[in-house]
Amino acid sequence: MTSIKRLTVAIAMIMSLLSLSVYAQSPEPELNHFAAPGISFDYPAGYSVTDESTADAQNFILTRKGSSVQLTIVALRRIVLRKELPAALDEFKEPIIKKVETTLGVTNSAERVPIQSQLGSEQAEGVRVLSSRIRNRTGEVIWLWSNSRLVALSFVRSNADETIELPLWETVRSSLRVQTPVIIGTGTEGVISTKGALRGGVLNGKALELPIPAYPAIARAAHASGLVVVQVLIDEDGYVIAAQAVSGHPLLQAASVAAAREARFSPTRLAGQPVKVTGVIEYNYVAQ
Image (tube, rainbow, N blue to C red; front, side, top):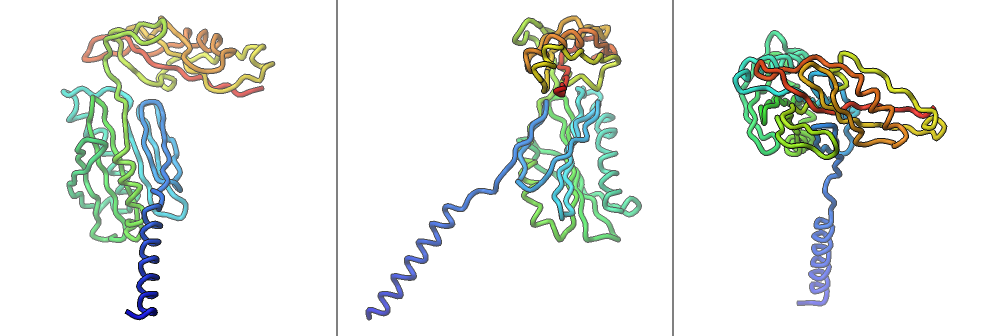
């Protein structure tokens, strides 16, 4: 082999090794993590999350500037018993599917093709929304009943964006975690015993009466601010019978507990029987 050929082979081997090294060191796509009370998921960087939750359901919408994509996560806050599942599922999923059809502009000519998809570690049912008139956009809705809670994801995008936006769909589906409300049989940390109570999550939106806590003078002078979380136990008639601050600025906790004790709620029934409910009330203080 001539010296020129040996030099050419050596250069080729070096370039190959450099390429492999660069490939091996390529970083994984950057992911963001979103967490709210009772729900969390990962999503690729570059997207924004809008919280449109209500008292009945958590609702989060992911979009990206300059893209047609819209991914929506909806999770009911309440327990859904097995015996009420068929009716509850229809009531839950149908508005979500119709909203996707409206977004696609195919309310009168939509075809729903059954699909199955992975949601977290479980198999979810769903539909792909198609149109005989509009073929450049696609929508999918999947839903799942797991541990007595209903959750659904919808994914709308133009076909031209599908390859680019697919990692969003796959990342959210695989990482979604929902902490479902359950009947608990043991006490929690602190002084409040929640034995036999129904876990209700964040209760602000469910209150009939929710007094605003006083802003203590000492806290105002110290410019204390931020979120204070108070755990409460509600009896069968909707009255708060125990309250304890579990997080937040120490100067704001006493006022928050006092306000929480005066809150009122509608009585809660499970399978027709009145039950106690445990959950949290959140107070957000802005420094004055």
